[in-house]
Length: 390
Ligand code: MG
Image 1 (tube, helix red, strand yellow):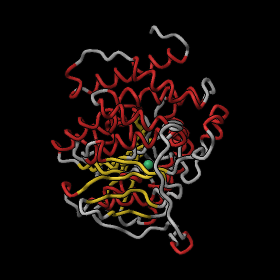
Image 2: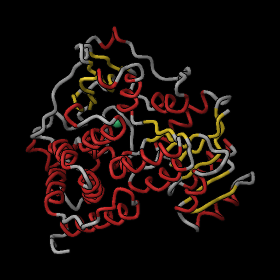
Image 3: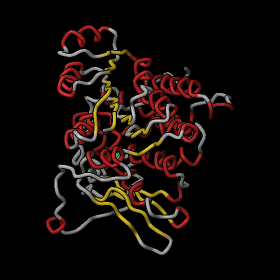
Image 4: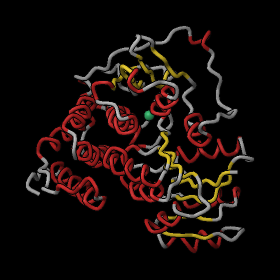
């Protein structure tokens, strides 16, 4: 029986993790969980799994939660609460199911404590991948991907020698607007953008999928996780979302990983690795699917993907700048302050215009990263407001 901690238990990764746990209650016990704002949902999950440690964001939620639980639980708050939770001695696997830069510190502390970290969060890997990998190595912690494409690549690479890999390919569904003419992009509303054809996800990542920024981030994430140069990481549009990743070897063979688009699979793989267990997921019926479709991405229509490669080529803090800028720009779109077609415009402007402060030691320093992230956010906010001198 493994002790599991799930950060973001009320979100979509948390939800799929619960299904994996329910499928094998003999394997996992939920030791701790966190949520941001869905206190009632947390309460319900906590009751049914009798989770001993809970973390909420606001102090004001603590008493409310404690009094509504029918068992005794330790309720902790905020960043400090998350730090305590991921470092609990009994905790063995930490699932990072929260989005945004907020996941960085808990991921760092979980790795530092030598845990197995099943990471669904792209942002921390993009902004501080090198630091996280270094810490993981020092603490003999495991950093396992949960993002479906990366899990696929991870699974495909198990038996392959790195030097025999020619390239890795991440697939992208193309999102809801892949066939929409570019002139129509200005009319895309947040409501349209959050409806993803194949995956059910949070608002931010749905918008990122619609702009292909998500795929760009995944390219940067793959660079960190698998340590391949960008030239060896490619993207193919595959609207069926059945093949999640491909690995081409030097002899011309291509291995592909195919499964129904259900996050239980990558989560279960990260939790049970190197074992596999049975899961209740829809069966793929290849005879009904008939054919698999792949095509090259349209970078003119979806410049965000190109921006990610550019930021990755420049290296250093450029991936961080792109990621931070995207958080603000997408939020502005969701609040209807900018139109959909302006998302790449503001991202490109930030990559070009943001002046990187002189701080050579950043590679080791999380506080620098968090500070820089805030500065970029402020810069973009001002850019959107039309005030370029911030
Ligand atoms: Mg993905």
